[in-house]
Length: 381
Ligand SMILES: [Mg+2]
Image 1 (cartoon, helix red, strand yellow):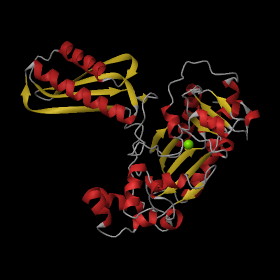
Image 2 (cartoon, helix red, strand yellow):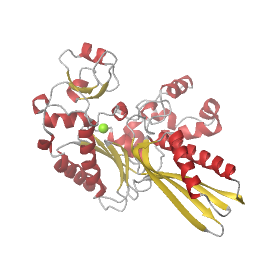
Image 3 (tube, helix red, strand yellow):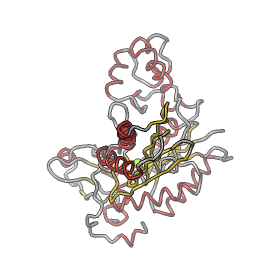
Image 4 (cartoon, protein in one colour):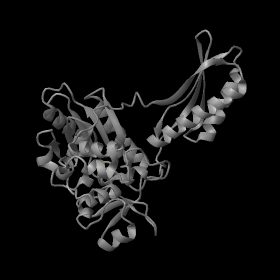
């Protein structure tokens, strides 16, 4: 394999970490959940899954399906420490690591002579560092790697290629593919398409007829396992910024403020879309001739709130008070961290989490909350 991407997915991450401090619960049906009348399962142990208990299931239903269920509260601070160890381990294997959530990441293994043994090494090293188990999928692109990591869970290693793609997943429902949620599946079914193979081999005109000239062919490509190979590394995502170069240098302060507002709002939309927030707001000002200045302020807490970022950026502009015509304005937010209060991007277009554990990334912040009985020192996390 020439270009190879690994998708590393921790198995039942939150529950597995909890098992480290509650070894007596191993092999028992356990969920991590916000309990209460409206609570839902965040992550279910494999033993619980045998009772039909899975993530996003209402707790009321979970208890009915499995009366012996043990319910543990969410301890985000602990899971975040575990995640950090996992991601640090991955960064030893490649400079190109795209962190997708606390429990999953893509790693570019291109250039590795035997990617499978590299993947086994990753599994081994993660286990050494955290005592946790993961599944790895290998593929020529992110789509195939992601699906491969799900085919042999838990503790799996599966390789998908253009050659074995249809043989491996062709019989499965098309909804296996990220981006094909309940609504799209329903429309596909109406067009007579249920499986991945049927999607991949759909005759010309059928998909285009049902989904239009752009979306139709895109769906067929999905069916053929065509996907992106571009990884967004943490370095690239440490900040988010937008800038505008004016067609004519600007001296009007009102126009500058308007531009700053629009840039800040656009940055905040992107932050929210990626499920991240940041603490440092930066204003970039380029004066003719080509003198560029930056002014920053670090906030007490991370935000992606447009009103806050607009306010700070405006204030930075007022304080800088450009004394020459302005050629370019930019607004950035840096020091990005995952925002547990928002759903991150890796949710299918129909709002369906891309893997079975989606909701665990939506879990409200439990940071700072007392972290249960077991002591974390024992956990090496
Ligand atoms: Mg996982």
